[in-house]
Image 1 (cartoon, rainbow, N blue to C red):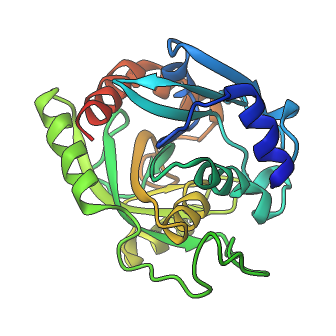
Image 2 (image 1 turned 180 degrees about the horizontal axis):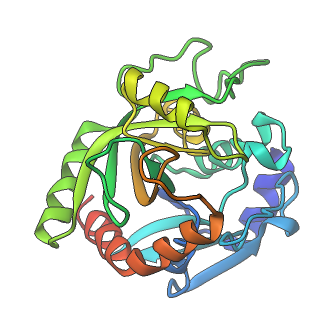
Length: 266
């Protein structure tokens, strides 16, 4: 960790980020117009490399509406073969750098039959079905407690702000529960039916580990899902990653407008 922090601080000098953003599949363009320092994951000691289409794999440091921000332009996933501790390592690094608020975005499939591709869902809670917890192992008391409370992982005030700004922008906004599966295969119709029964509204293969660790690190967390497709069994069509990226591309302007409105008013 010290080697990671020293390397990054040597690049960003006195810049101290307070806001962190993780950009999901097809949503990385948000960081393209941010002026500042860009560092490839592959150059950072301790970081892994993102191998999924739609993830550029770099940290972007700069000001957004006067707020010192660090952006993960793409993430890496548990299904890429990395240990779960590596997936959440960047969140711990953000905490060490000074980040106290984290916005996490993802592309997700709709479990709720009322949802449509193109909707934006504010995450109110999550269900961890990845089969692993990123806090397993030796605890770093400088980051958080051994047994952290998970009553409010997703900050209610930030969620209300995002919902309000989305409606002001005329966007199709939803609020719901996000379920995380390990992937990389999409879920079966039976699994989607199970998720619906247990209370999930959307499903994906990320976000939960990062949100869980951010809450552990006492960060305020806002989660936003871009609903890019209907999950298996919701509609009679086959699923593919290109559809996910294509839908995210279509609504990225709406998503970016929402993100900017939220950041401006945090």
